[in-house]
Length: 152
Image (cartoon, rainbow, N blue to C red):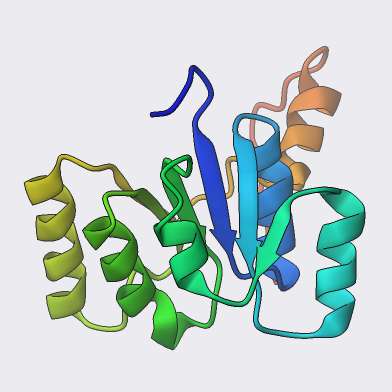
């Protein structure tokens, strides 16, 4: 890592990428975004993260020696390829669920992370979602003993 606070490059800033960026910025230094989509999303990034690099080239984040980790929130079919590139570039890697579309790709990513001594994490939990932050806040004084939820 380049400092006491890990720096992260975010790949994908659509609906889920925005939520991911909001959670990441509470704990990490977001160094830049790779975004290929809508102009409105680029405008959102520039408004929420003034002065941060926004690029349409993944290599800009992967080659940045100040980026410690890559967080991926892109279409599912791109997860394995982008994660493999991030690991090859020596970056710790977070991939929104699912990690990949095949067991073989998942195994390959796990092995690549293991070989390089890098963290590989998949977002299969909602622990960092703002909904759960709010639930923790409102139940602090009066804990919930049992709860049923339906997630749509």
